[in-house]
Length: 50
Image (tube, rainbow, N blue to C red):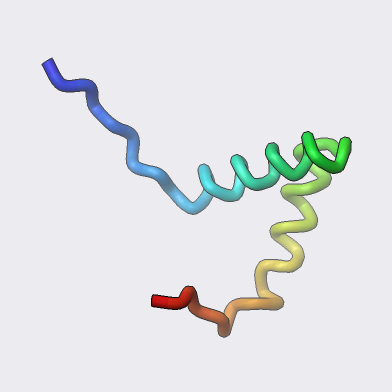
């Protein structure tokens, strides 16, 4: 019997990054998420390296 795996979404990654950063900086997860969302447009033209 195989376990169903969840598809990792960009929202899940954003939440994980915000949570990790919040722990490291002692800020709330909501504050970090808000900062990530406001800065999202700043780097839209960048792509990941191959």
